[in-house]
Length: 167
Image (cartoon, rainbow, N blue to C red; front, side, top):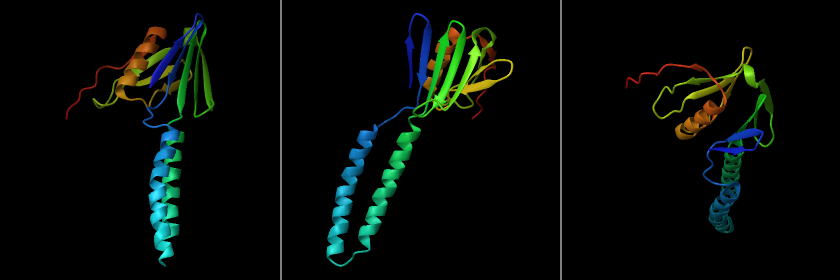
């Protein structure tokens, strides 16, 4: 998902993975699965088959851990701030973990066409010394949208030729 906010002095673009369900929805799904599973496990434990109950609990715990991990991974963001004199790129899950600052005059945008028709183009913001990939987790449509937004703000420094698809 790509969103942008423009003010008088800057453009802020936020790129993040598509999230099909919120953490609250995941909790409700986990609860809907835990109640019957633990209820059946408790019934079998009362009938003397007690080893079922710990396995039911482990199953729910593993599912909850997996749902939490996926939700955490979907909180990853790239925040690209374009101002009159600089371009700042920040990457992180809840807060920026890595940050790059480029002067506006010396940067370019490298667009590498997709290798497969379902993929989007690879995008890199670069200067003479460093290159930063942006939006690598985006869907094709979102990647094309990000490329168009960046193309209107940053000079395209490298644009690879069209890749032939021989399938």
